[in-house]
Structure formats: C-alpha cells, structure tokens
Length: 185
Ligand SMILES: *Cc1c(COP(=O)(O)O)cnc(C)c1O
Image (cartoon, rainbow, N blue to C red; front, side, top):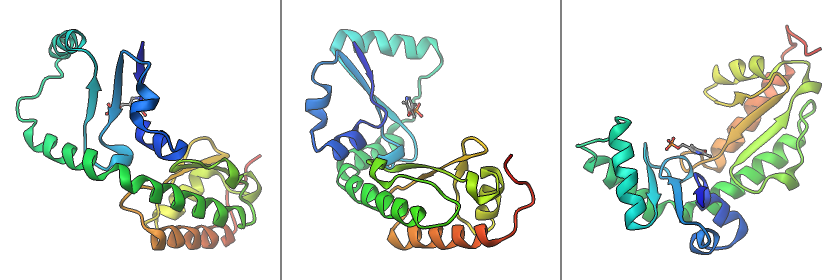
C-alpha cells in the first residue's frame, strides 16, 4: 500500500504525531521537499530496496532521470532537516490569518477548521468574484488564488511571517472596500 504523503510533515505537525508513526503501515511513501518544507523543488520516494529499484527503472523509462541533481539534493537536505520545525509557525500564522479573515465583512471562514497552513474562504458576500479579488490583491503584491468564483485559497509558508499575514489582511480589507464591478450572482 502506497501513501501519497505530499504534505505528511504538515499532517504530523498538525496532529502532533511523528511521521514515522503516521507512515508505519505503508509499504511506500512519497512526500514533497518543496511546499511546506521549503525546498525550491523535489520529492522523495521511500520504500524497500526492491520497490526502489523498480521505481528507478520506471522513472528512467518516463524520462524523469536527472544527472545533475546534487545541488537540488543539497537544498532538499536543508528542507528535510530544517523544514519540519518551522511548520508549527506556519500553522499558527494560518490560524492568525483565519481569525483576521473571519472579522472582515464579506468573508466567510470557520477558523476552527484551519489546522494546517492552507486556508479556504468564501467571498460570495463581498459582491466580488474571487478572481477579481485575486487580481486586486496581486496589485498589492499579495498573492491568493481563486479556486472557484466564490472560494479563495491562501497558504502560509516559511517565506511569509506574521507581518506578512497582517499585510495580507490589510490588503484584503482595502480591496473589499472598493466597489465591485462584477458581482457574484
Ligand atoms: C504536490 C503534490 C504531489 C506532487 O509533488 P511534486 O513534487 O510537485 O511532483 C503529489 N501529490 C499531492 C497530494 C501533492 O500535493
């Protein structure tokens, strides 16, 4: 049984249970060195020696081999060694953002549901679409995706500190005071 554990270290930080414990029952595990752990690129595959030999072969067949991976592996090592201890801070910042968002008129979010570094919130009542809001935020160097016209996503990570979260909230307050052009039906 294989685990797509891309964000397993975030799960571990949120649950307060070690990655070893969470993955013990799986034969193989994949996880990302990028995303929360902060490397620019890279994922790891973990499993038995036999599984690994087969995986290497498949990777080669799919053209996924890379000869000059050392410099990326160095960044990956830092991600693996330094990344996990930063995740509780990301999660705290996400909760801070969620509370701030919940106080902005036009935004709906349940802060109790935010347990890792990813937030989804509803902007229907703002009279703007998520895509409009996204564009206006980007003009202030705050980047947040619209996932649907009603729902937006924000992600905290090691390059976003508490002051950055405050700036994002302030930008959002300003954007939502601007009269909207395209109202959500
Ligand atoms: C990001 C992600 C992947 C892919 O990882 P890459 O390193 O970008 O290839 C796979 N599964 C899940 C659930 C992910 O979030």
